[in-house]
Amino acid sequence: MTPAKGPRTGGRSTVSLKILMAVTGLLLVAFLFAHMAGNLKIFVGAESFDHYAHWLRRLGSPLLPETWYLWIQRTVLTVALIGHVTAATILARRARRARPVRYAHRAKVQGSYAARTMRWGGVIILLFVIYHILDLTAGTLNPVGDPAHPHANVVADFAPGRWYVTLFYTLAITAVGLHLRHGIFSAARTLGQQTARGERLARQSSLVMAVVLVVGYLSVPFAVLTGLVS
Ligand code: HEM
Image 1: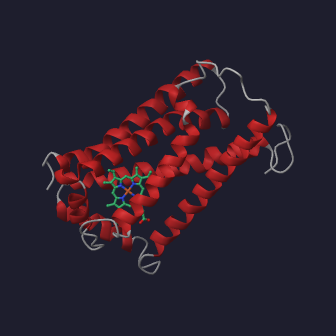
Image 2: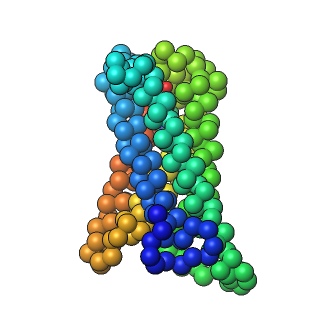
């Protein structure tokens, strides 16, 4: 898609890249909410949690052969992630090229903490997702690592003796929260939000969504760490 207006520095227009970032970002946020809802089933019980994981593998059947839905979802998420990171990299390079001489003094106030940490936050999240897939999907880094028993994998992962795993997840999920707080707000602006009232609403709702996700995700490792879930 090539909008009629928008700065163009060769290749894709900046506006198209921002739209690509917003749309792929929102798709990834939708996954995060669905994944969090699934994780919270751990509070219902081991059977419910494992049943949910097995249901996910059979989703779409008999229309689709078993695990096809899961692979379609994985493909869509991977393509969205690649699009998101590629657009972010091109936009960052373009911004740097537009100012070849770096600021002698970086101004102290440059938007919120979340806005200033988007790039590094993104890198941390990417590294976390790779670790997390090896931990809880592939099971290679998990003390149990049994794909048939995700509840046992989660409980073993966040056992009190492995407090450093909970600490690592806490840092990574906080980075997710900060990234989303600014990301959702920016996406609203890219997708046409322009009024002062809309700006306030976008700021508040991005904060609420980020807090809900951080609390929802962190409730699982902390419930295991404190013995509430075992
Ligand atoms: C403490 C919080 C979290 C817990 C307890 C958790 C739990 C799990 C579990 C049990 C699985 C394996 C599901 C299965 O194979 O049946 C999984 C997969 C996954 N998780 Fe998480 N997760 C958490 C946070 C996150 C976060 C913050 C992200 C993204 C930033 C994320 C992204 C993924 C992805 C991409 C997969 C692979 C899904 C697939 O197999 O296609 N998770 N998670």
